[in-house]
Amino acid sequence: MLPSEKSIMPSNPDYPGLQSPTATLPASWYLDPDQFERELDAVWYRHWHYVCRAEDIANAGDYRTVVIGNQNIIVLRDETGHLKAYFNTCRHRGSILLTEESGKLDKASRILCPYHRWAYSSQGDLLATGTGTPPAGFSRAEYGLYSLPIDEWSGFVFINLDAHYATALADSFDEYSVSLANWPLTDVRRGDTFETVLNCNWKLFWENFNECLHCPNLHPDLCSVVPIYKRGIMEAFDDPDWRPGSSDEPALAGGIADDAETWSWGGRSTGHHFSELTEQERRTGHHYAMLLPSMFIVGHVDHVRTVQLRPLSAVKTHLRADWYFPQAALDDQTLDISHFTSFAKQVIDEDGRAAELNQQGLTNRAHAQGSLMAEEYDVHRFQQWVRQCLQSHTTSQAPR
View 1 (cartoon, rainbow, N blue to C red):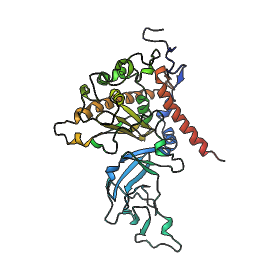
View 2 (view 1 turned 180 degrees about the horizontal axis):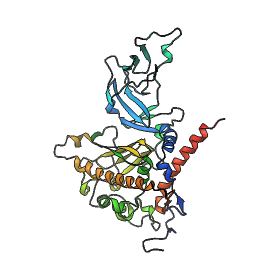
View 3 (view 1 turned 180 degrees about the vertical axis):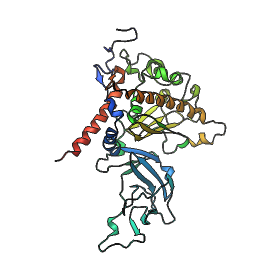
View 4 (view 1 turned 60 degrees about the horizontal axis):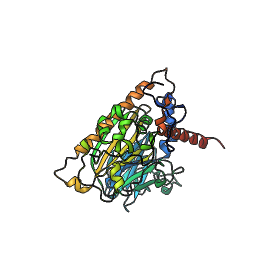
């Protein structure tokens, strides 16, 4: 055994680490365009996706368009105040309908096709066929827009591209998500946004998210705020020798550093804390809720952060991060929000660079598959989830 290696024979009864050699996904799954298309069908088109905040489409006629894979979607608030989602496709000959990323429908709350002027209500009904003459037997009632499941959770709006497989949104969060019930998610407001395109497969982002072996090497500033990350682990029970109640020190037990309050430079908070948090929630400093494959939400003592992904190709992924604060913090003229947002932006940049390096290495023809370390049990769990999605899709497509 090399000096840097350690036994994985745990004395910790709750140790979740992998106990035997475990292969990664094949390298080709991060490179092959055909595999990417299979994952769009099996993963991205069958799960809920975060698209915007409710206040982004607050008024009747407000809309957003969003592209997931090669699917273009309209999300809007209809004239009755309800949220609606439709494929951005005219029922005439399939033209795109709305071409802007956001906007407001006309005064009559109509969706007008820019090609032949077919008109639809905000509730998806076909109102008129432009200058075309409908043939005998044509029924407008049969040519409404293709609708999609849409739901709102705590001020966040989600859509699902497959009504047949859509489970309840509240039941779709990852089983290891932490409750954010004590955060006033509906009331927070956006303070900053960051967008970038990562030159990597979407799965590499999630794999990096699910382990901290890279943290001591890539995130020195973050490790100062979250000391347990310096050990290459995320939770106390990741230590094979940990015992419940053995230590309250953040470096051993997890949570925010003793001299820190939130994720920021130096750990200094905005001073505008969420009032309903428990002492344990304050001491931990970060609580995650994950909705695979599209996003996660993090609750801190003074702000909320979201990160969402969109797959662009087998080797490119769009990432957007948003920071939400209590309105009092945004109104505080003495507060520089960038002090908090720039800290997490650096972490995102560090993770993005790691994922891009990972992508570059996977192109080498000698590498067909890797092997996971004991601490990468959550990477394995994610990869198993991908495998299961693909298997489920294959089964559902098989002839009966």
